[in-house]
Length: 90
Image (cartoon, rainbow, N blue to C red; front, top):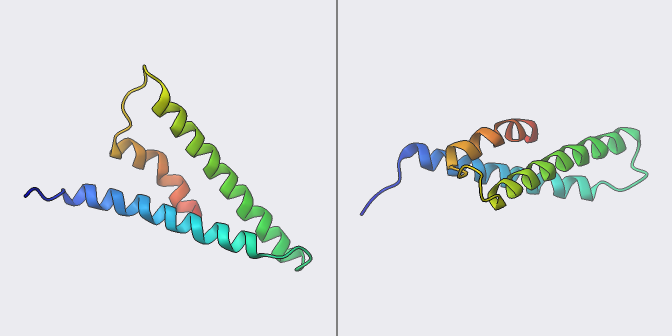
């Protein structure tokens, strides 16, 4: 039985963490009611902007996967793309 390398497990964990953070941020942003005050409204707008940037990145990655002439998207390359969004969602 082959066990995955520790670096591979860490990479998968980071991708899972990004998905978990995305879910938490989205749930909070959609739960903020309009008219809840200026600070809450500003926070909601900022969070929705971050989510919009994340959606854009996912679209770019999907487009790269669909290109025939593109280099394969390895776990390492994916992690390089996801470093900044992970830090921003934290």
